[in-house]
Length: 389
Image (cartoon, rainbow, N blue to C red; front, side, top):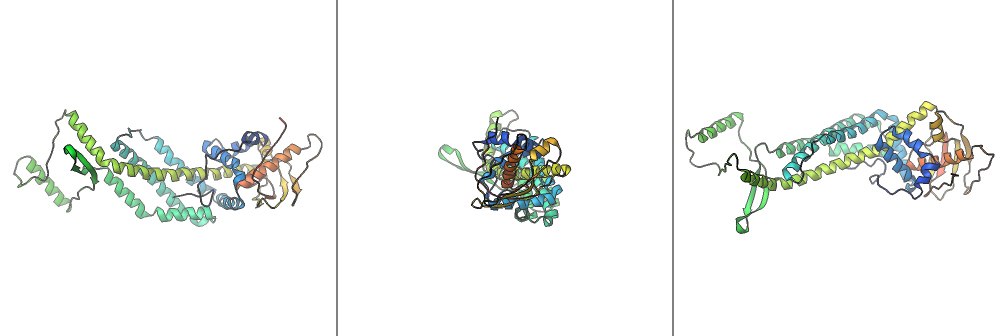
């Protein structure tokens, strides 16, 4: 299962290396102000949006347009997107409350995985139900593919199978293990078996239980025993350890398989949470701009070979966030130009304008909206600043 909300065909790489001039970009463009407005004290949103901004110049036009379509869906359905993000957070908050067991023992690892799987499946059910109710309101390829995948892979049959298997792995009737004899009469080839089915309805099972009890009390003798039985003395610690080791050998393969399944689902939920965090940051910023009555637009991006730069009411978004009001914007028409020279009197706004250009470039190549009434530009594979310090 994959989320694919930031890229059409791959996961978002949160650990991607930052550009060498990251510190210069953060300082010269005052990106801390932008990141704080997007994060609203959510550390994950802060980390994801920062990583996205720092990797923005590696995106192509197709990726930009893909994210813009997903973001438009988010702006049209902010409550649903917020609920999806909250559900992923719910899963990991519950996971933190699980008491840590000694995972080197297969039986403990199995119990831990069962508990984690139940938490994850409960959250997946809520996510699937939320997607079923609201999928018709989304139009982007990103959300359409995500909801289609959830409906296909997380159907009722899938959840019923998981519940059945988890109930079976509780081993309420004991662990059934087969083994062979190896050299020196040592056990080998331990295989966990499905528990024996108890046939008949509850009345027949109850009658059989009574007969078994009566035989144990010596009321009558059976013609042959059902099985050979080993009874440990109450204080036989060595025997108890031996039985525990036999049980662990039997459940080891099941514990390993379940742990891998839990890891797969956890990986999906973490990536879904991380990719949604980017759009949650965009929604937070969108609300701030609405409060400021500041314009924003989805820019038109072209490839790097086309020199294009034209804007209407382009402004420094970080200045707007700091002053908490809409600043004066600039109009630019520089199509086909490869060099711009900005001149003017001291304190005339040159640095503010240059910062607005850099911010607009990064935000555009992230797939975000940009701080302008309209904006057309070409993508670049590097952004560099040299401000006076």
